[in-house]
Length: 336
Ligand code: ATP
Figure 1 (tube, helix red, strand yellow):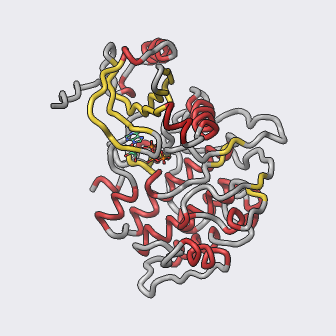
Figure 2 (spheres, rainbow, N blue to C red; figure 1 turned 90 degrees about the vertical axis):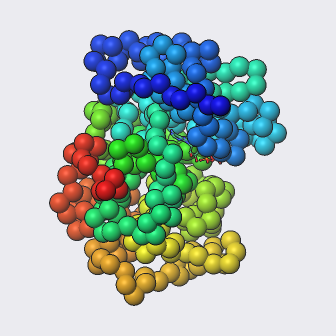
């Protein structure tokens, strides 16, 4: 039987000096430092466990990736990309409350281990399955947090490329935790690194990512993939905003905008921008937001550099009244 997890002090409750000490100690961890408790979930080449630091009793999600499977499925590049992106986003100066945090990695003969901040089991897909659709207030809150996370990673030169409800975990307190950077891409800056980085924790991100155009083969998930990926065009952060448009639609309509019997027909709908709002779609501002994200030309999409980056969202009427800075400390309507 699985031992019940020890009661851990909340990470945020640690005094700063102790926190710095803990963070330094995290760099030297091995498998023996953790108790592996129950399984939280499975990925294509990994199993994620609830783990507890034997010393501090702090709980984490520990992603265990099988080396044999990584080799067999030729996922070496992917795993290194994931680690690189997570490391970049987990530095104290670039940490963000709505993005999963990597505390340390280690390995043994069989596996690679990623020690991650613990979200609850729930993801946005699970929430949608239960509620069918969100209220406009719930959707505004959720979308604001996704926007905060995406603008933050883009400002740090990272595009996620697989934004979908399954990869938007929900924290114990009902906040968004963007996870799974297995498809992410780090852009080489054409300008110096964005500076100064966002003080943590914060939901603000400097506007506009560094960018290098990249062609890319299809990565991600059929229903959320953007036309430029399907057409093998140069891509940038706009791919994540296309996916965001699909998600906002899904949150409020209860179904995905591009749906069909096979990937082939889904792709045809996407490349010809064929989707329809249901007659009972509840909010005109949300509709306008979706219409400014689901655009064939990625440069036209809200959130991209050409459209004002984060400021573009802040000025959009759907987000009127959102306290962006206060989001991490606000009570999530998803908890009601
Ligand atoms: P893939 O391996 O194909 O990219 P995936 O996103 O399902 O797929 P993982 O990131 O390995 O793979 O996650 C597997 C599952 O483990 C998730 O679906 C989720 O249920 C759980 N999980 C992952 N990270 C966390 C976390 N930080 N906190 C809590 N549960 C998590």
